[in-house]
Each structure stands twice: as C-alpha cells, then as structure tokens.
Amino acid sequence: MEKTYVNPPDLYQTPWKFNQAIKVSGAGSLVFLSGIVGYEVDGTLPKDIVTQAENAYASMARVMEAAGGSMRDIVKTNVYVGEEYQIHRDELRDVRARYFDDEGVPATTLLRVAGFAQTGYLFEIEAIAVLPE
Image 1 (cartoon, rainbow, N blue to C red):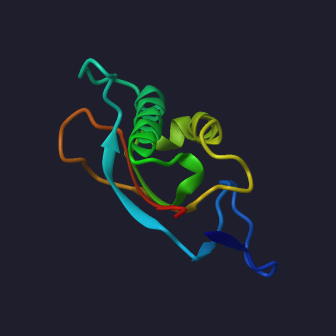
Image 2 (cartoon, helix red, strand yellow; image 1 turned 30 degrees about the horizontal axis):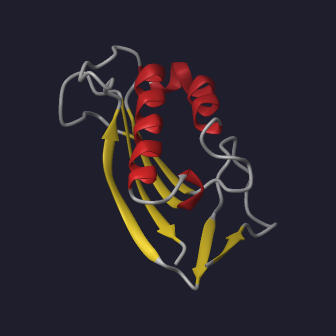
C-alpha cells in the first residue's frame, strides 16, 4: 500500500495540522471506526473536553490495534466538538499531536455541534483507516 499526501502549495494554511487529501493505492482492508467519545475504561465520563479528547484518541488507538493496525493507518477523521472547544483549542491540538505525527496526519474535518447524542459528551471522533495487505 502506498499513501500519497496531497497538499497543493497554493492552498490556504491552517492552524491545525492535517493533510488536504490522502491518495491510497494498492490498499488492503478498509476499517471504518464509529464515533468514539471520551469515556474512561471504567465507563465514567469526565466532565472536561480535554480529558474526553485524550480518552477518545486512546480508545481509537486501542480499536486500531484490535483491527490489526495503528494510528498511522488512519486516513480520515471527523471530529465533533461542543461550545467548550474555543476555550481549549490549543490543548486539544496538543492531545491530537500525541497521536498523529506531522507528516502522517489524516485528512480531517472539524465540526462544532449544537448538541451530542447524550448529555455530557463534549468531544467525539470517527475515522476511516486503510490497512496494508
């Protein structure tokens, strides 16, 4: 499998690190990750967005490992945040940076939502990954 990161030089620069597109050729298996929220392993839900984000990324890494891959295999994420996002934007970028290196960041969409499926959710992330054969 070969991944080509597509970042035309004449596009705007953003404060978040992500690739505009990722072209995958010679792909193996596709993995579609459901929306993951920030629960602790024991099922409790932290009250702050930064801890929820950390837990969600850690859970995503565990799901990828169980699927036979790693975070480097993720090619697309959709991130959903609530109102608290603005206050903690830099902290959330730092959490994300611990899971994706500068080159291997996935194509990403960030959406601020008016509400989540359950009261208390402040962060949710879903992903698509491509595993090599």
